[in-house]
Length: 283
Image (cartoon, rainbow, N blue to C red; front, side, top):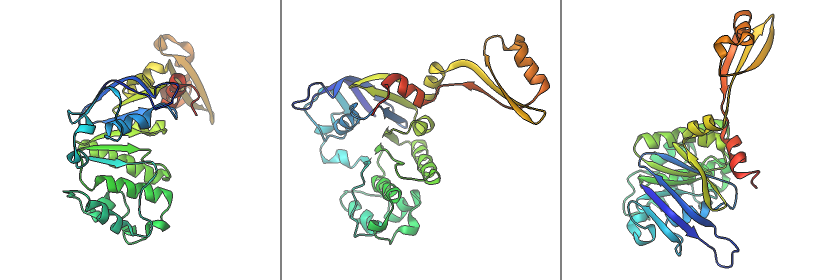
């Protein structure tokens, strides 16, 4: 769906390139997360892939061709949800969606259908100027779905949403993938990326510093240790044991035999840990 090779870009007057040899591919029916600190080049990459920025080196292909050369038809095939919603406050949610739907040659999903998808049907006739930030983000996402695109660009899709609404949005993204859609996601929410992304790429100083599936990366950067918690005489006891030699580890065996095991888990790294390791403290 997306193929990027040796991508470079330097803004006029900038002392260093925003992108410096970026390469990655995004298969169909997958969620790719582009992660990294502020100023790493994520927005620049998105703009190139959406055909909004030219003058770059290397190659960037979407649907098998350069986005900037694809013409109007290209925008009929993508959906975009920016971090900062672009909506008309004095119109209702349904009126906003009807207006944007009219800009497409074909928008097969009705305003009410996409409002249902983001759980905003009950606010369909409410003016957007009264919406919370989270509601605006969900309406922004609904707008990107009107043309039922095979490819979606989502930027901080759950910003401003409470945990329950954010979970609904993540479930929607997973459902879209199951329907064969491809999602290109940028986010600073590492737990979200770990949950829904098939592959993540860490963009640091204009380069892909690390790439892989979240599960593989968390194991690779984790510690080969087991954390065991047991309840004994009403108190909880936790021990950390090396994975190697557990069968003959007397302390571990004693914990198993004398306590009521409450939990066992390995010490994988979180994507937050990996982010800090790869990108430093960020901004």
